[in-house]
Length: 192
Ligand code: AMP
Ligand code: MG
Image (tube, rainbow, N blue to C red; front, side, top):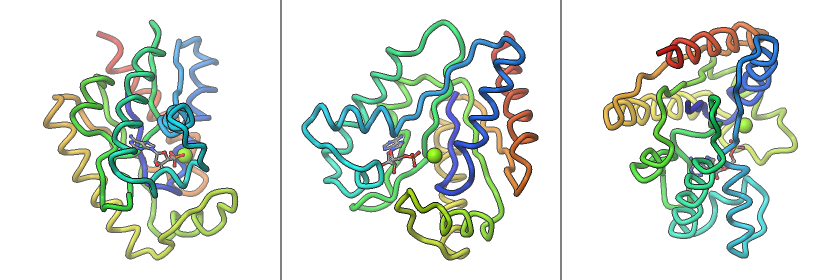
């Protein structure tokens, strides 16, 4: 499973709730954060960076780390369900760059893509208050563009893999319901 959402959408919060739900239901599920694994890979490549500075590196360096991170995540995936917390695209130094290009998709082989979405105004507010992160673009118009670009790249991922895309709303105070919906979607694709 691949769960994506633009910065500030509350994806990590929903995934924490999802982990609680999985535990309560004795459902074997592990969440792996792509950025964290990529950060470890970059450190091994000699680049010890803040997670929000990776996207400012040369694109070739990022591509290499991205592919290694995808392989590492595939290796770490066990018998249960692996949920990868990541992005449909990254605002890299060179432009809008796919978080899930073909070489990554081949390695992760996801059965479901999830897009977590929220109201642009709420995302803007979350970005402004997220002081431990280096969040840019706090205008609602910019955020609208990012939401659209996420959908466009999600569509591309759906076509190239044949896996479905589920859109989940995470409006203010709704993270528990969002996690419930996500849990149901995951269970429904894992059933067969
Ligand atoms: P996050 O903590 O989810 O905001 O991710 C932190 C950083 O990890 C992002 O800004 C990217 O630089 C990097 N990252 C996360 N997922 C991917 C991906 N699929 N491909 C490339 N870089 C990624
Ligand atoms: Mg996050």
